[in-house]
Image (cartoon, rainbow, N blue to C red; front, top):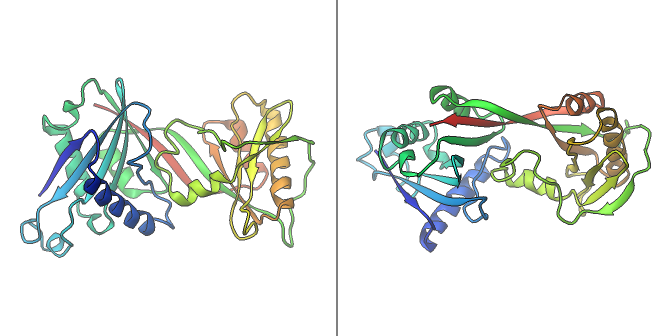
Amino acid sequence: MITYAWRSTLAEAELKDVESLLEQAVEYDAEAGFSTATPTMAGRGEVRHLLVAIAPPGERGSVALDRLPDVPVVAYLRLDVRGEVADVQLVVRPEFRSHGIATLLAELLDEQPTGWSSVAGVRRLRAWAHGAHPAAERMARRFGARADHALFKTLRFIGGSRPFAGDDVGAAVEPAPDGPAEMVEGHLAGIAPGEREVLARGRTRLATAAGSVLVGVDAKDPAGQPACIALDPAGVPAGDVRALLTTALLRVQADGARVAQMYVDALSEAFVGASRGLGFQHDQSDLLYLRPL
């Protein structure tokens, strides 16, 4: 029913087909915040692309599938290979979801000599699932993957009739033109474009002797768009995390924000505790799955 082909680079026409698929998926997944893929982003290692095609209507073995459009690419997979580990990004065209395309592809890649075994040296796969993605959870159970890490996207409403109040620790203000660093490797590669836009607002660093936090609001609509707060808790004493976040909330509130968005490392007890204590509410969980081959 489906076929696949590996590419070391995408031809111009293939890239257009993939970008068309991803544009439709991003629009379809906007509210859920599901993962996307980045075919043109520079890789951390060797990058390979997998294009998945399906038989034409009338030859798909299913009335439901035969009703779907005749398109050149129904799924796209990007593989970043670094030694024994490969990072996977997979997106299925929205119309073809819930028809077993991803599951069948995973089975074929396991079974056929042109699948995973054709990628020399790879022994483990890593894949991020952004948001409450039931298909990712089902596939993880079926193919023996386990959740290895998690980040929580959280929101804190501020300003308006119930402004946030706290003690400002008097941090130094510095520009941060590069924006927030990646908290866990690979998380930003497949993040939804809307979430990437929020993170890109974090271009001001509030620094103290204990550590620093990046903040920023939307320049045109600070009240209508989420502000960014980005803290890397590594090296920050547990007792100082709350003070840094308090200062960050006060800063974005003063700049006109009415809601702040922040990713929290689920494995950092100090970070999770401080964010909850300050009233950040869980919005979604991003899970990193690890699967041995």
